[in-house]
Amino acid sequence: MVVDDEPLARRNLTVLLRRDPDIATVDECGSGAEALIEIRSSRPDLVFLDVQMPECDGFDVLELLGRDQPPVFVFVTAHDDYALRAFEAGALDYLLKPFTDARFQRALERAKRRVTHHREGRPPGAEPLIIKSAGQVVFVSIAEIDWIEAANYYTCLHVGPNTHILRRSLAVLERELQSGPFCRIHRSTIVNVDRIRSLELMDDGEYAVVMKDGTRLRLSRGCRKSLQHRLGLRRLQP
Image 1 (cartoon, helix red, strand yellow):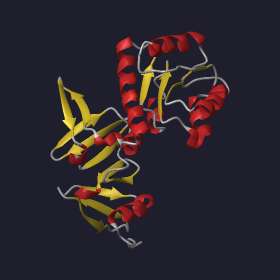
Image 2: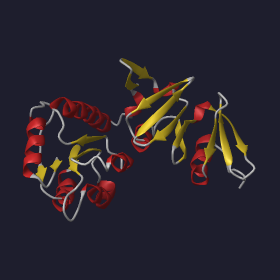
Image 3: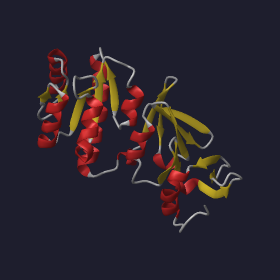
């Protein structure tokens, strides 16, 4: 489904989508209010969603849909001001107008893979992460990741002595890794629980998560219960 209040923008996306043999149908919505009705009705696998629309913008659409949100959505906009917010909302990608056909194709291929994972009930995190940097392509196995930290709408993957930068928000990555040995311990940090060596009570009454390589990461009070559950602990000392 393509949601945009500009007819020409909708048409351009629709033409590009219909070129792909894997796309069965493409519906269009000219407003956020219309999108709320159509998404709940037709349950599309993938939505390309404009940010700025009168009365009900793209973020409003997602908030009002609640649990009816599409499994995969990509924001499309002429404004780069909303990128961080878009990734925090769980967007797979953020297409900035005007975009090239090649840039659109990269976004579509990622979206198709995510749709396939969703339909098969297969966790996206089961596949290695592909990192492109400095003229090379690095394949990072999920099981090798020690911990992950947020860096705006990027994430830093800490793998042994190496750090890889991935163009994906922490919120999106957390959803992809939810079936693996990963747990959020802070609004900006996710750890591989298999890499935790110990928990240490600090002078201020909060805890530090100590990884096997000695890295110390702060455990926020709001994330205590989820970590307790993952580690099989009854409770942590207040």
